[in-house]
Image (cartoon, rainbow, N blue to C red; front, side):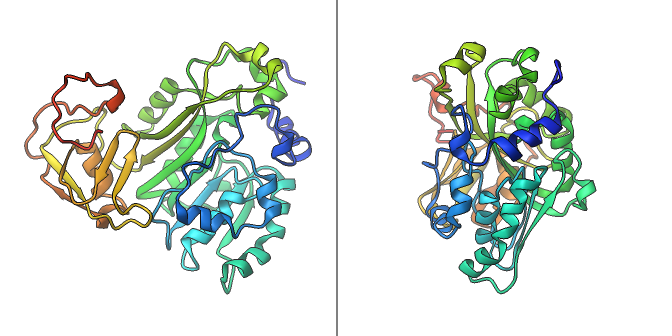
Length: 353
């Protein structure tokens, strides 16, 4: 075994021969918590074959709303649970591509296509599983600007070339398209010596990205603003693993980012407001763009220029009324999470709450 890195071939063997289901996991990093699932996702999950659900492992539920008729790309689809969920949510007019490098997992996913389409009531499959690498989507015939939403569940951390992964994501996304993914992040850079450990790497720990390095990577690729929708601290729940790598704090984080040219590197104030119509399914009273932007139905709320763009220049546009433009600038906009604000700070009635 290499003394420097955990190779792709070894990773394929780990996921194809060793991890055959969630019961084979040795730590809690890839154990999904489904508390944030919407009623639509729960209803779709009830229609997914038990064989797929029993084999599933992931660290979140990366399925945004408004997927009907969309073209979705699932990176690192594994046995296909999230891919089938997305197929149900996009409906017969949409299409979902699942990509994974592990043939053993894809074989199980493919064997379930016909039965899942029958359960969903679809006349023909709206799903396709392709074997390949998430660092090279061109090799899988995924064209520039062809994807509405890219999802991924606890997989990108495994990649040895994350810059190529995100570069490919923004290549295949349509203008205004959304990246919505959950992964394991670290509160500090993970020491390089852990890269050669098959368990630490396969359990989504050794390759976890330091949050600030992730921010810099997206900045360098032209994505100047992304949003965190939720985060939880990971309890490894394995004394042996904690002894090895317990000096690092790990988090399951869900991120949304958009392919938009209008974003700035900080939130700027142009005096704009956003009013949510309450028309997104499962979100009748409010819509959370992220963990500190709650848009309340019917209430005009102050938003920064970036937030206005995320709502007005994407598939969410129909559900919001945005007032104002960028003709007049009022300085920086305070988009800090509510938990970090001073209790005595003036409440301007904005969406950052």
